Each structure stands twice: as C-alpha cells, then as structure tokens.
Image (cartoon, rainbow, N blue to C red; front, top):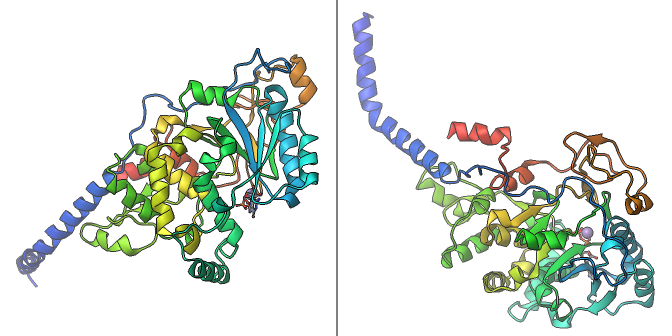
Length: 433
Ligand code: GDP
Ligand code: MN
C-alpha cells in the first residue's frame, strides 16, 4: 500500500476517534485537578518539633512541689481488677521514668467496684495521690437510642465474622465510654489535661520535663506517640458519618483533614459512585484509615468537652456504630482532632519511648545530651543505650536500631502538615499530579 494511503486512513481514524480522545483528556484533567485539591502545603519551618531533644535536670524532690510549675492534670488508667499486675507494671515504668519527679495524681477507672488487692497494689507503687473511681452504670451500657436486642445480635454476628473484639460487648462499651462520657466524668472535672495509660505499657526513656506544662505553653491540644492504620472491618461507616457531620456543620477543611484522606483518582461523575463503598465520604473520596494509637494520649480535656466535639459525638452515638459496628475510640478521636484542630496544635512525642502490646516507638539517645553528672538521673537510670548525632532521647534503654515497628506511612502522612521533610512517595505523587 502506498504511503499516502496509509496516512489517509490514519487521519480518518483519528478524526473518528478524536471526540473520545478529547473526553479522555478532559476526564484525566478533571481527576488530576480533583487530586491536586488534596495537596498539603509544606510549612516554611517545623511546626511541631520535640519540646526537648536531650535530658533536662529533673526538678528537685519536693513533697509539696511548690517550686515546680504544674498543670491541672491527671494520669488516667482504665483497668479491670484482674489486671493488677499489668497495671502495676505500667505505673512502675511511669514512676521510674517520669512521675518520681513530678508526682501527678493517678485516677484509676473501672466499670466495677475496685478490689482491695488492686487498690493496695497501686498505692504501694507510687508516692503520688491515687483515686479509685467507678464509672456510673449508664455510661457503661447501651444508650437509650440503641435497641438492645438488635445490638446484642449484631455483636454476636461481629464475633462470628471475626471482627477484632467485635464479639465482646464490654469492648463496645469501653470504646463508647472513651469516645463520649470520659471527659465529663465527675472525677476528672477538676483537670484540664490527662495522660492516658493502660496496663502493660513501657516507657523506656526518661521524661525529664513536664509534658503538661509544655502542652499548655505551646497551646497543644492532642499529643500522641504512635500512628497507624485502623482495622477497616471495625468501622465501615464511621468516616462517612464524620464527614457528613463536617459538611452539615460547614467545617473548614484543614491540611490535617486532607492528610487523613486518600482522594479518589476517578473522574467525575464516576467518582460519586464510590460513595457506597466503606470509608468514603459522599463525594467518593476515602479515609486512609490513619489514626493515633489512643492507649497513649496526652490531651486537653476541654477540647472534648467543648460544643463541636460533643455535637459530633452525639451524632455518632445516634448513628449506632459503637454497637452495630465496632468503632474504636482511637479512630473517633483521630478523625475529630484531624477535622477540628489546627495541625500546629497536635504534638508527636517523638522523644518518648513507648511500648504497648507488640508495637513500640524508640528514639535514639541524644549525642552529648545525657547529663552524665546529674545526681537524680544517675540514681534513676545509671546507664543508657548508645548516643547518636540525630538522637533526641534521654537515657533510653530500648533498642533504637529500628525506631518503630509499625509502618511509617501513617506517621509521615499525618505529620505532613507540620513537617518540612517529605517522604519520597509524596514527591512522586506531587510530580505525577
Ligand atoms: P486493646 O489495647 O485495644 O487491645 O484492648 P485492651 O483489652 O487493652 O483494653 C483497652 C483498655 O480498656 C485497657 O485499659 C483495659 O484495661 C480496659 N478495658 C477493656 N475492657 C474492659 C472492661 O470490661 N472493664 C474495665 N474496667 N476495663 C476494660
Ligand atoms: Mn491495651
């Protein structure tokens, strides 16, 4: 076939194809524009550096603590009587690494009356004041808005489906309690900040400054150590409920909210069809499941007590997902905080070594930052793991050769709004779109 014939045929075919080509280009551009709206600005400077990056001289022992500035704060642990040993382990660790110098009071919470053994064990583990509280019955049960029989049947079904803790009624009550009633407990009324601890945790660096004072000084609302992805099967409709509440209350989208999301790469109007999938808002964009591991939290109770959070919680309670699904308090807290709090008001306690269950965070020790002649520090922790140039820890004893054993995706994603450092995949995505 002569060349000009081939060219002619090709031209005819392109003409026939061109409306489709234009449509494809338009859809691609629309999808790219959509994704670009989720881009997060890189700040000029770090908006959330560690409060300290080396050991500080701990405050002197002082029974009344008159010389030490203190915040209105408590160390709060929910536990069962049967967990006395594991609870003691946590208290011993926190005392050795922090509270021997600061003496913040403990508040222990239980849904049942405390056993004498549990109380005696805790009293013997600290010089700080301790309170043993029983959670009012109505805050540890099904709310009036939920049909008990239906809820119980759903819990049994969740158990059969193998949803993590889905079959345990008490676990559902616990998550609902930490999502809603916790902040307004009579026993916590007098406090502004809380540090949540659980049985069986370890703190493996010394904490030689007062984190509550620093939270207040830097106007921080929520502090965490570990960020990770939620188990999706526990909360298929949670994100949709939160996102719907956000829209109906015209809440401005912050960079932290964007950091919680994975935009859909589908073009309009296909994108909207995805709204029926789990973890999607009504536009079809999804939550990336990232949240803060709430068994450690240092946070401002007033944020949770204030009207926006209370209104969100009331909406979630009505939606029923604390029982008909197994919404966790960690996911609820994180979505609320990431929606309602300015990114600079969050704090990652990167200098804390923390372990619970299998997961840990372990910073390296700060080079020349260990105050080797400090009497109080030497009495508490005479030796420590090797120091490193970029270390920020104080007398940490954990192995920092692997600083954390949970994937870094969620931590770097949720830190994007406050950090000048970008992981490579963000650059790559920024480049493609
Ligand atoms: P995980 O950390 O999510 O694996 O769950 P845990 O079993 O550690 O429970 C989380 C927290 O809630 C811990 O502080 C437990 O002691 C506490 N907790 C869970 N269920 C109950 C319960 O039925 N009664 C009481 N008093 N505490 C509970
Ligand atoms: Mn736990």
